[in-house]
Amino acid sequence: MDQGGEPPVFSASAESDGDHLRVVVTGEVDTATADTMLQTALREPAGRLTLDLRAVTFFDSAAIHAVVRLARQFSGTLTVLPSRQVNRVLEISGLAEQDWLGRA
Figure 1: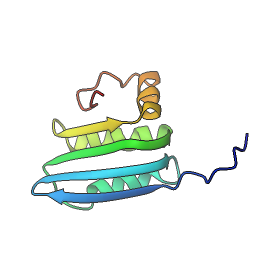
Figure 2 (figure 1 turned 120 degrees about the vertical axis):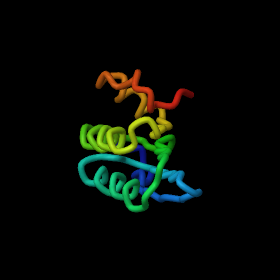
Figure 3 (figure 1 turned 180 degrees about the vertical axis):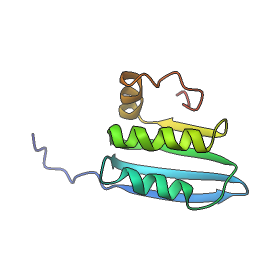
Figure 4 (figure 1 turned 90 degrees about the vertical axis):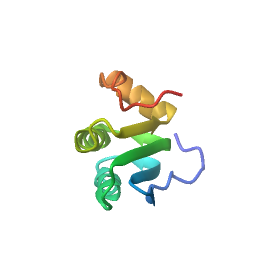
C-alpha cells in the first residue's frame, strides 16, 4: 500500500572517539545495503563498536548476518542499539538475548 511518502533512504556513517567507533544506520538494511553497513563498521580499527540501528525501518537476513559477523569481530565490545523493527526481527530469529543487544 502506497502511503505517498518518500522511501526510507539508507545511510551508514561512522564517527570515532579514541578506540570507540559509533556507526549510525538509517533506513532499510537488506541484501543491497547490509554489506555497506558492515564495511562502514570495519573501515577503521576500533576496540569497541556501537551500532546504532534506532533509525532502521527494515532489517532482513542479510542484515542479521552482518550483525553476527560484527559480534564475532567485536566479541565482548559490541553494543547494538535496535529500533523497534530491528528488535522484533532479532526476537523472531532467536537473537534477542545476546549480550551485545542494548536494551531500551
